[in-house]
Length: 419
Image (cartoon, rainbow, N blue to C red; front, side, top):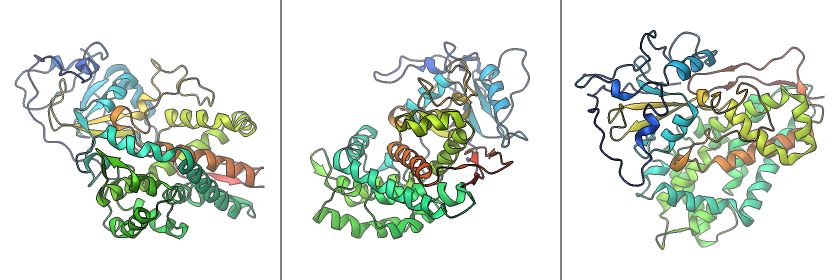
């Protein structure tokens, strides 16, 4: 996976900080109130960002250190304890690793998602809150029922295809296909387009609505039909939605639909793989979730906390934030934040019944991903379909899932015995 472009260092701001404009989170989320090091330690006039670390400590480790991709958790522990706010020169980004700081950074309007193209945040100047207001109603009422039925149907079809087998690998045969099939069903698109959407998600389309060159041409005829004859699907909800009293343009509808289709990509597939791995690793908890399906949502949230699909979420500073210069890249380490012992008791343990697993994997604040509900429905109904179609589902003898990855991370294989 391509690493972020290393930002060009710029001179750090002066240590004097003017009052924060009304409505913004206080700068103290990057200050000594929450961090053991402060940007005030930056030397005024320095030509490049300096690593901020407690006096007497060794040089900070880097995300690019050998072995991190295989086991990042010792590094995360070191960062949280000794380098909670530090510039990683080899990686080219400021690292933030504690839960409270990551959550605040994700919600800070001065830190924006680097655009992969036309995204949800960049369509016609409509605000994040306006987009959420447009997308959220699509997950209610008749549209929610249609979404649920589509996801259930897709999950059951995929699960039944495995029923005659002795063994299967759920990563390529279930996890990689179900999210795309669920997104297609949510938007009311023909099921036979699942393979096309699946391919697009691997070549540019993502949960931020990254533009794919063929997407507009594909969606335009469906948008025209939904405008003339709206139904109960999510695409119809977008076509009939209004912003400031005006209907959304075709470009905006296509961008929002791309966001939802992108939610059917690798991130949801990886999250689903980790979710299944966590439950299969804990058969007692899996049995309780099987007996009480209402527990599935909590089990999913706990898996996102412990094993998020994206361990590193990048933001770009549009203005100076504490010691972070404008234009710099900030790496929010979700993989470290989700296992912060200051926030979670026994954070390395998977507990499907944890009372408050937090909420970072699909964003926080204004960056909350509208595909999160679609991903959750996909995981819930995917699990239910597997358990219904394959009641004896379990790990293949001697198999143990192994997660790998630096930016994104999940098991590479889920080898199971089906009967």
